[in-house]
Amino acid sequence: MATHVVLLRGVNVGGHNRLPMAELRRVLGALGYGDVATYLQSGNAVCTAPGSPDEVAEAVARALDADLGLVVPVVSRSAEEWAAMVAANPLAHLDDHPKRLHVTFLDGRPDPERVTALAAEAGALAPERIEVVGADAYLHTPHGFADTKFTPTFLERRLGRVGTTRNWRTVLALADLVATGG
Image (cartoon, rainbow, N blue to C red; front, side, top):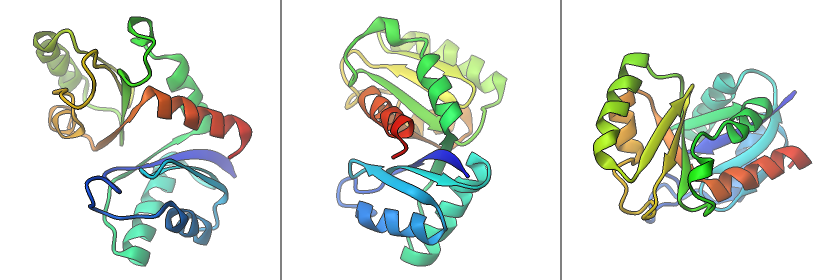
């Protein structure tokens, strides 16, 4: 059993896809996952589970659909991947405010040609910045996330991958959950 971070996209946002975190914990427990902890009400969980992060994400998505009729994208990272992602943030030096730094977690590595095309397009969106590293898109939104062009939908279209975004405060809180075992 390895520790995984599980991220759901689009739950409890604007009254849509209602999912109490107690229900998410129950679903994860029913899958046989252990040490389940959730953070906030937006589909963030840490748990121990067998299998790869992709296998965990797929199992959680299937269970949410089967148990609750909730069809939402799910992305997962191992504890090691999470720690590496935190350490690798290429934009952390730009801002110390955790609500102006974000990461969009993609369901896989995007095609390098798409990343290059996005980088070229992103120059016109300054002062906002984006750096794609593997399956993670790091964002700096100096005017806040509410008005950014770098929404998950925008990035999904450009990169051809499903994604969900978390602010740096949430990223660090989940890193703490991983470090303490939930």
